[in-house]
Image 1 (spheres, rainbow, N blue to C red):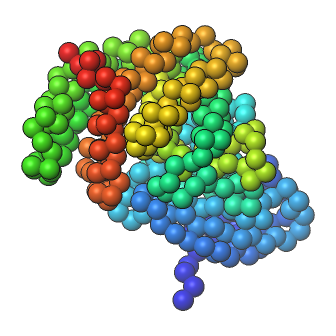
Image 2: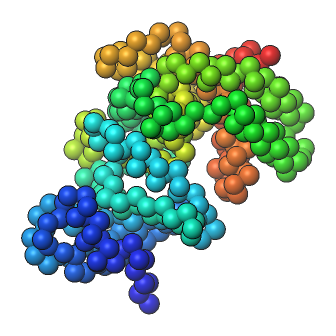
Amino acid sequence: MTEPLPAAAHPDHLTESFRRSGVLGSGRVCHVAVESSRNTLLSRIVRLHLTYDGTADDAPKSLILKTGLPDRAGNGRQEVAFYTQVVDAMRTRMVPRCYEAHWDAKQNAWHLLLEDLTDTHVVATAWPLPPTVEQCQTIVRARARFHAAWWDDARLGTTVGLWFDDNAIDRYLQRLADAVRSFTDRLGDRLPHERRELYDRLLASAPHLYARYRSHRDVTIVQGDAHAWNCFLPKTGGDDDVRFFDWDCWRIDTGSDDLAYMMAMHWYPDRRRILERPLLDLYHATLVAHGIAYDRQALDEDYRLSVLWQLTTPVWQAGNNLPPVIWWNNLERILLAVDDLGCRNLLT
């Protein structure tokens, strides 16, 4: 049985969206076919094949429709904000082109009409296999270029993104404390006393740790969900056309957050110990090459703090009902990284 087309994929709707985007003149979309459809953990991805009447030389022949799952309908609000706030203000394209980003507050519904990169780009490797060294270098250089483009930009916190004030930070820390309590109750004796104590110390130290964020210096736009599988690499090689996708966790923060999420959260110690410092060196060198004045030691300090904060990620993932195969392994790896890097020394 053929599934009905979502409203956002109807020919008339696509015609108007493409005209607003400047890629379609007098032609019109006359037929839409679903080539594939799949659910991810948080969204639904539909690949559409498009047929046109009239001239449509610049219009896409295929398209990605991304929308919410019924039980996670509101999760796309932040990603829609990314494409409407951030992408429209970018000089370089390091994300898939977006033809429409729509959030319906009344229906708590959203969708994105995105460039289809299937024929030109590829994800580096299948989860959970890590990328090759060369692929890691390509991703880190591209990540540094993106961060450099927004480094200490005057628009941050004004027209692009928001700063958390003290009241917002206090509310977040209270939610975190509640989430940690639920997390530890859920795990029972699978979370030993020593690890429970580490979370207690993190919560007690949090107001002090937030001093770095409150400085509003050496900050940029971070993806948040910056693992290597949220990156499209060009099939032709090189790193001039790397595209990052899945931006539902973006925020203003230190760029080291994305590096910690990619390496400390997802790599086991043997690989991380080999690649971590060379990739941090590469990231710093790329920033400097793009005119960013950022001390190399400051990067190490920010990275350690970012790794420490990543202790909260498995807590949120478990609370959002992600499968244990994701958050349990993330928990084990990030605890190892915290110890390897001496991050406990940052706790008061």
